[in-house]
Every structure is written in C-alpha cells, then in structure tokens.
Image 1 (cartoon, rainbow, N blue to C red):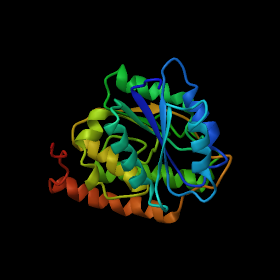
Image 2: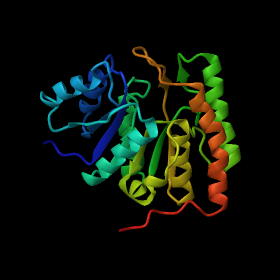
Image 3: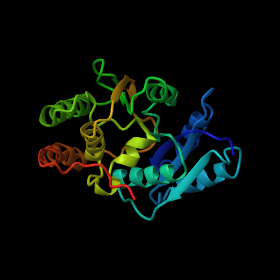
Image 4: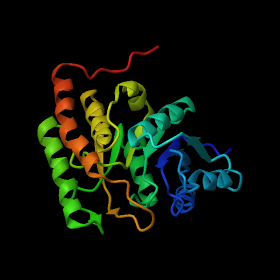
Length: 251
C-alpha cells in the first residue's frame, strides 16, 4: 500500500455518475499523495459496487469503503469517517463532496495551510474574498451567503463560510472534539464542527476556493437542512454560554 498522512472522506448517496471520476482525480494528485475513504449510505444506484471495483483494480491500497445501511445523514457519515481515519493513523483528514463542486486541485492548498502554515483547520471558503459560486440559482446563493452571515452574527465565530463542507482537519482536532456529542446532521453539522473547533481554541484558516454547482447527479439539498442550520445555531450559542462545549475526555 502506498503510504499517506492524508485521507479524503467523501460521503455518497447515489453518486454513480461522479464517483469514479472524483476518486481518480484525488488519487492522481501529485506530488502529495492522498488516500480516499468513501462512506456510502446504501446507495441503490450501485455507487458502492463501483468503489469496490476500483478497490480491486489500480486504486487498491489507496481507496477504502465503509458501507452503511440506509440514508443516515451527512453528519453521521463524516463522524464515522473521522473515527475510521483516526483509528488508521492519518494526520490530516479532509471533508469533500463527490460531485466536483469542490475542486480536487484545491486539496493541496488546504493541506499546506495545516501542514506547512501551522493551522489546525483549513476551510475551503466560498465567501472569504467575496462570493465565489458558479452555476447556483441566485436564490440559493443568497440563502447560503446570508445564512453564513447570520451564523457569524449569532455565534461570534470569525468565519465567513460557516456552512462550507470542504475542509482539512489536523488529527488532534478530531481527537479533541467529542464527536459523540455532535448532534446535527446537515448544514448545522458543518457549523457545529467549526464552532466547536473555534471554542476549543484551534487555529482556523479560510482558503479561498471557487464552488461549482454539480453537473451530474441530483442535489441532496433541502429546505429542512437550511432550517436546521438557522435554528440550530441558537442552541450552539447557548451551549457555549453554559460551558457545555468541552474537550473529549481521554481514555
């Protein structure tokens, strides 16, 4: 197996149109080597079968799969991936979508922000230098942009793109956060992870990226996901005020 200190976690549900291309795009990056961990929530379209075929071919030793039964939510998928990555000793652990809305060529920039520049969390940010979103309907752009503004106002967290799902964590961040206490599943999961890392004192860097709307497959976005984010931040603020955000107790 080709060794790497970095693993890119990609949750999937019905991504057969994208999965092989995104895996090959990540694994082809040079000079830094990345591994890929797919967390598939029982995709009925055969996404997991494609991953297994790649694992038996030229992606062997660099591509891994966790299959779950049923659509259990983005947040729980990432937490399962985080625990697996920690157990296997990766030092840099990434979140990334399967649909090319996140450019694989930006992964080395996130890695460098942590590995070379000393940050604990690097966020691929759509909004740190304006609005860098391509092919989204204007209503969706405005909803996302102002949701992040709202989160920043309510929580005080100094991050422009609070709902971003393109990130790199140092291992110690995910070992410190009590992952079993993370409660949200959708966009609010992304907010909760950033807010928790910030409140625990970790250094966070926003790296400007261009977000491109998916070309293939179906979006998993819903109004309920945005609702969870908008109302969930009040609970996060209250948890911080009452001292409930604490590091995980070490065994």
